[in-house]
Length: 287
Length: 254
Figure: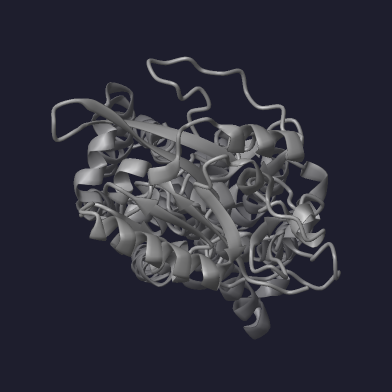
């Protein structure tokens, strides 16, 4: 195990919320894309809803990141070298990569949002259904998935104990992001017209996501080894319990035959669990 | 004039006077934090945005059962392969013409990625300016052909300054001298770590005692890039496969 003496970077609530909302925005877009490409006509409204949802959630992300900077007005230094005015891109620095992914994904999310909005108003078919349209949403989904997962990689590419002691954080955040995205979509679907078949599909997909997340939680702790003992403090244990409730209970509810209330409860618990995961990972390594 | 400069801090000569800390703060106009009084003489406690030199006091029991201090004036190591510089997304952290590592205050935007990367607990976040700050190796003094303020002020020459190659020679000679005198525990730190540090230390205990990672732990943040991205890629494939499988099912039986 690597032994370092690192000062915590004081990444706190802005970053926790960015990780959470970035996971939702990227995950929801990816789910919308897969629903559009793989689902039938009954799924179309939910796919549209996913694209309508992704952009507003994503729009909050750069605001949070900018507010977290010591010098918010210099946010553009992330992309443009302030001395040479050339582009700044370091593929080996996830923060640098992430900024560009956020920007490029925003373009995909914006186009898909406008397309979904137009579809909502005129009830005409989406412009993104042809061959090029399919390629467009697939590429957008790849960027969305990257956004949902790279935040964990960013933490690992440091010398901070816990974060840099594991390779599983990016994977864990991505699995959790997909689960939280499915929960968000399921929750918002209920606010609109009840799309029973699409909802059942989301529930079924979320089973896979939760199983994936649980497996990665095990991998995360195994990869940490003795370093994981930091989480034995009561406050972190309490948060891990919330994470477990936010995964195990929804998983059990997804197999329940009783429909409406458990599904709502499952979605809410998944969201709370996803947030708790990011809180415990971000704060737990720094305190 | 391009030069490759270095510090050599000989901890066996440090008397804990903190002249280096004071000279550093004076020259760099660092107001410092309010002192923290514990049970020792260390009231600056760590390197951070205000303390660019920090004199550590480590109590140890001597062979005769007495108590003695190991003291060390700690500073930024200006690593040849610098973790802070590696992750910095704005390119605010540069290598100067003196081969030192410098945070450009007019470029840094306070993202603090460098703080999470530095394995030596060197960089601190300055709330007042919103910037990450650390030792500049007295960049302005070097440009004026002056030695860094800490080395200038050190009364025992525990902190030596010069060409890095000269510092390595001086450090090697001093190590041989001490070993020759029977100080078997004497060792050099900074020759191998991170491609060679620009701040060498002569220690009389294990590096970890002084808050320095052991040589085998001197690894860069980027070591985690490939395996972390691969883990994420595998998860993405499994997640998408799960979603495709779930969404393709047209039964809607549930």
